[in-house]
Length: 189
Image (cartoon, rainbow, N blue to C red; front, side, top):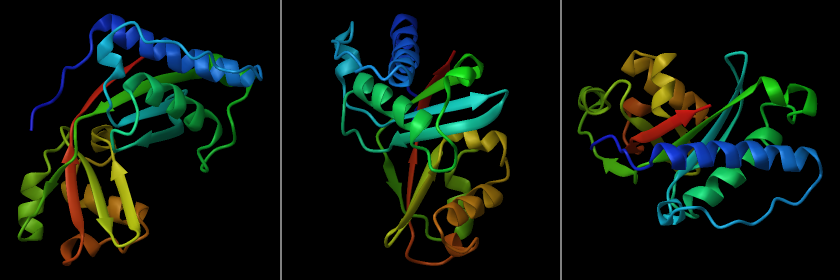
């Protein structure tokens, strides 16, 4: 699996501007204009996450793993969702908008991996490079590759991901979990 370099600098600037404008429009109670992206590349369907931080701390993060809409539409929709619908936080206010930093992560397609042991799983998840998505029954969760900065130990990373999914911390060592890896192209203001 190779790290993607999908977007030009101009496309990245456009997407960051689109995310910020979408949040601003919602704060003003205005309808977000439906516009055609400047390049066909931005019409490609991809999984996208939008992360908001304030003074270096997480302030909202919403995204989609599956490629259900175009990159541009996903950035617009997930920016609004991260600002106003992340259940972990109160909605963004006008007063704090200038302190918000926006980061966009465009995901590669998910790749299912089938480790034969916990040790093999640890060798398959590349620290700092891969995001990981887990699923067991109705429980699921993901960590973007950026989370490695806070959890650089692979065992801790996977255990915390299990907890995020509502599973026991050691559930990843037992049969029945599906594992998927992916890379991201991330950029921020």
